[in-house]
Length: 558
Image (cartoon, rainbow, N blue to C red):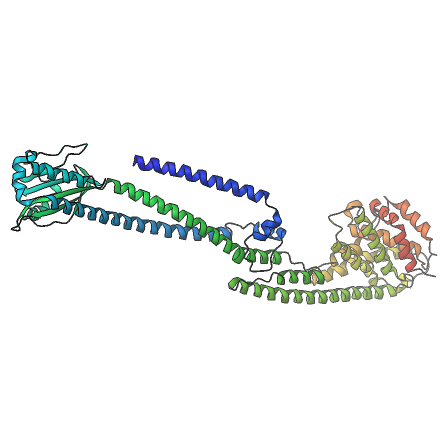
């Protein structure tokens, strides 16, 4: 075992050095070879439209929640290969061991037959009595030594006459460690031969036996030597050492294991390569394409569908079936989403149209307001977009919020539907009692929209419509109606509408006043910033003067 371990260690050191040199050379070559040359010789097995380098990197770097499919494939194939390798190694080891025993048995039988051929059976009794004093004895002994030296596995060669009292030595060759017994000496029967004594005493052939006792692990062959009359005179005995068999078994197992490691690595690389192009990349490509779907526009939807169809996965198995089903389902879904969005846009337009119709019905009762609802909605959009451009209220001023406020702006005076025509169209200044009735339009408007909100599950723009209707007459300093809210307690949409509503009232003709000039109205907004109006809202309105003028001129009243 010590020699075996030394040899194994030496082999491993040589192999490790050899493989390290190979790896270093390969790494250097990979570093110095131009990429376009590597691309030409790179072994690929695409089962889809080839991915770009960036897409390939993205497809191979997707992280899974627990264990990736690539890792599972490697684990399954690795375990299966290891189990097969382990089983094959064990079976091969057993077969090698049995083959080695058979070879040792053949060697022992051959040596025993050869030894028996040089013994003269008629002289056995003389050999026992005379020993090495006889020339013939010495001559036979020399031949036996020559036979023993023919193989390093032959441990002992001796000739015994088997009698009831023990083994009578005819020849017993000396070894370096143990001197042989003298001729005529009686050697006691070994315990392992007790079952064979009847056959040995009868001079019958016996099968080779393997023992592991006083003289070590040995395979023993007894070959009977018969005289001319057929009587067994003695046995030519050969002991084959089995100690080297263990070392040989270990050497064989190591070689088999090394061979399987090579095959294992080859199979693993092959499986990884096949799995990468036939399983992992197609699935990850589908995942990336599906995860990148855009739904916000028809162009984006078409681009997403084209990206998925462009993969052209053709693995010829269940993955291709999954891809075809995904592509079809996605195409149908995108088409359906397009139809839904078109219908949604139509409904939105109808909804906004109905709001304007409702607002016009309310407005038409007041002969002095003209296009008030449209102008205030336009001013509201100008203010909100200017505030967003300046970075004010970035978490609030989204596209959706601005659309909700602008679309619901025409409803800010919906409460006037409960105010009498006489009061709405009175040419002079209102009395205190009349003004109190007029102020009720804010509360009435809030109640009307609150009833509408109660009838729908998705309030959408109605929440802002309620804020506009209820609070567009509140002042920044808290000195107006209906509740006396002040500062930021007033909803942002109502603060914006306050500026738009007052400005339009200033530049419009009323039964009780002539229109102010554009410049005069702008000055009033500037003067009332911080008292009547939110200063940020007023400042945004004033900075957007050009756009405000465009809206004012668009609806100019002669």
